[in-house]
Image (tube, rainbow, N blue to C red):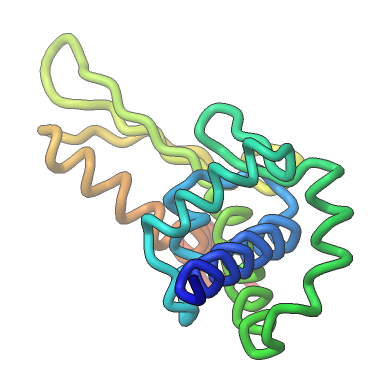
Length: 176
């Protein structure tokens, strides 16, 4: 019987941990990203994680829409009461991971890439970087094949800011 009690406590702690992460993210988050954040340094297994997340949805603490999860008002109220039950070191790790995830998500939202097949062959690859107001740079580049088009998209995603800076430098040259 003691083993069941330990499992129940473990699952409750995982649920509290998931609610804590969801509150720190403060946005709808896909399952894979949420699990990645929960697994960092916590030792939470995937199946326990999914079971607990589904349990939170069933009890109305979280909601899933379009494969993304967020806390409900009930979840926000409950985590405010229970978060102190999480070890401090775990809370710090979760807060740091959530900050990093928010920063990466914010950056990703500002970068857009698309590719379209040309009638005459090859691809037109569109790459753009925006700020909160709109595009700050947008370019179309020809790629002879799909592999090259994908490489252009991936390279831009990795180095969008640097690419923008190089474009500005190329246009302005050695201007004072």
